[in-house]
Amino acid sequence: MFALAMSSVRHRPGRLVATLLSAFLGAAIIMTFHSLHDTAGAEGVDDVSAESMTTTAAVVGGYGSLLVFFAVASTLTVNVRQRSAEIGLLRSTGATPAQIKRMVLGESAVVALAGAALAVVPAMFAGRALLGMFQDSGQVAGGVEHVFGPVALVSGAAITLLASVGAAFLAVRRATRAPGVREPGGRVRKFAGYGALAAGTGSVLTTFAMDGTDPMTMAAAAYGAILLAVGFALFSPALLRAAAGRLGRPAEALAGASGYLAAHTMRRRAGELSGVLVPLVLFTGMATATLYMQAVESDAIKASGLTRSVEDKNLETLNLVVVGIVVVFSCVMLVNSLYAATSYRSREFGRQRLAGATPGQVLGTVGCEGLVLTVTGVFFGTAAGFAGVLPFTYARTGSVLPGQGPGSGSPSWRSPPP
Image (cartoon, rainbow, N blue to C red; front, side):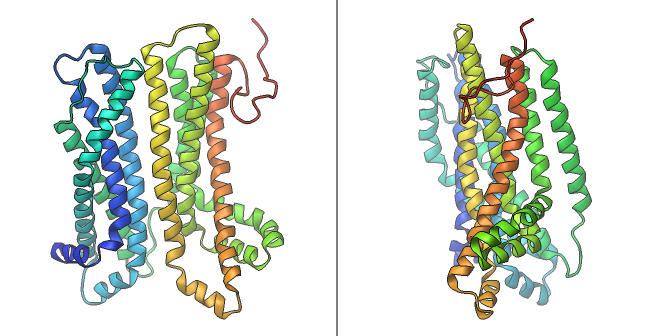
């Protein structure tokens, strides 16, 4: 099956371009930040500079690993859905599910290693630029030289390979199940969703009992917001059905037949289209919580008249870099997820045309679906983010509402003076 996988990669490389792009971006980001480990371990680096670089590499490397997994998983889902006929033909000729899994895993491993190899040179230049940014902000001494060594190379290749193979295994499970066999993950997903919501609510509520100047206050609020976003993402099919029910009539009134078809399709295909909601909810929640909390923290330090310490600069750099990485990968995942949600529906669109739908109505249906998905994902992601932002703002400044962003001109509700 590995030989078949290699033959598939050679003869149809275009099918794996999206996966290669995700692996390349992920490996480049991981190598870039893990090169700070190599730089921190070089001779002559002072302890403060080494700590700044090590902390950044550890935090961003962890986020990067998760994002690589999600991005590659979304692209492999597209690939496997497009190959349902091919996989069915292999099953009918005697191939076992284990053999098909090995074929897809072999393809993913080859693409992941190719992406990691292509990312080496760009990661070297990006690592030097990142080190220069740290030096310009005073977090790293100016005499430190950038080192791109074994930690960056091994971690980039290993994490990209493991994420790609793991994502491929999950993506091919559904395609290789026998007809009529249900996926046994519904109860586990529901249990995990309730657990994430409960843990996120508890983490957010503990923020009210913490000292606003304690660095752990931001951590508790941020982790709570992320857990709430994860909980919403796990319940994305139910959220999409509810949104389609609520917005069905307004969409039909505004878009006519296209709105009716969109609402009907989203209710019937909620499980498939909910894959678009997952990155929207997660990344909107993470970005909202991170950016608002960092803005509140920076303004609070400025208002107190204190000079920002190296730790404060490190925290701000980490937050901004993480949000930047999230934006890049969210764009990749959204494009792939939307493509996955529409590319395999050519027969459905053809039947709609035969039933009398015009090309404009078919396009309008897809547009209405995308609009409802976007509004739903941004709404629940923003709700998860602000669930952490508001307690942190109250603990840090005594105001319920943050003084940054939209609505910042409105008066804040401040606690009474002691």
